[in-house]
Image (cartoon, rainbow, N blue to C red):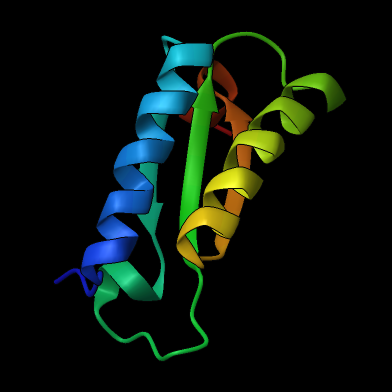
Length: 92
């Protein structure tokens, strides 16, 4: 049961558009207290962002620039994990 307010949904829609614009193969997965429905007013929006290719400082900075602008615009906070799809989906 997701517990997202209307402005948080709008922020996520914009985030998805901008991330996929820059990284067409990206997958964005929500997790954490917002998804479980046990969040409070201090909760952030937890995101797992999976991309093709290596995750390096440049990629992390590009994604952080996108998320930061949206955080300011909508007054939300994203907690993000950025990972390579192949690594994330591989067995340990």
